[in-house]
Length: 204
Image 1: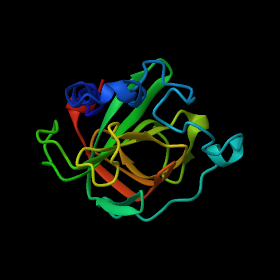
Image 2: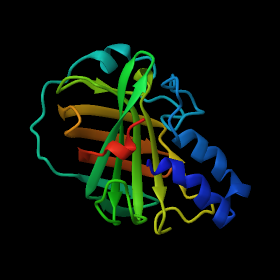
Image 3: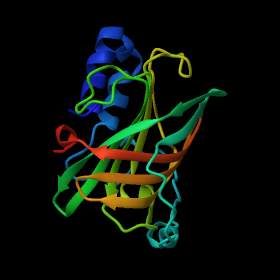
C-alpha cells in the first residue's frame, strides 16, 4: 500500500481536514491519467523548469550510483535526513511510471508497517535511462509529509513542491531505483540521493 493512500485518514483523525489537509492529500495521491503536472497535483505547483522543455528532455549524463539514500530536507530552517526508500510501478495508458517514497524513521518493510517521522513522495517519474532528467513538464509530482511536526507545525502537515528536478542515476526494473532529487517548497528544500528497493505492494 502506498503511504499517500493513508494520509487522508491521518488528516481526518487529526482534524486537519478543516485547514485543507484533504485537498493536499488528494494532490499527493497519484492521478490515473498520469497528471499533466498542474497546481492540483502533488508536484510543482508553480514552475519546476517552466517552459524549459530542452532541460527536461535532455540527458545530463550518468551519475555515479551510491546505492544509498541520503537526502537533506531543510524545511522552516530545520534540517532532517531521509535515509531509506521504496518504490513501486504505476501502469499508465501511455506506459509505466515510478512511484517513490523516501523516509526518515519507521521500519523498512514492504509495505510500510510503522509510521515514519517524515516522507518524501515522488510520483510520475518516467522509466528513463541513467542521466535522464525530468521536471514538472514531464508529469513529475513531489510532496513532503512531516508526521512528527518538527518541521511543519501547522495543522496541515503536507506541503507540495513548487519546483522539482529528478535525475535517474540507475534503474533495475522491479529491483531497485536510484534518483538524484532537487525539490523546492515554499518552506524550504529537499535535495540529495534516493535509492529504493522494489515493493510490489506499492505498485498499481
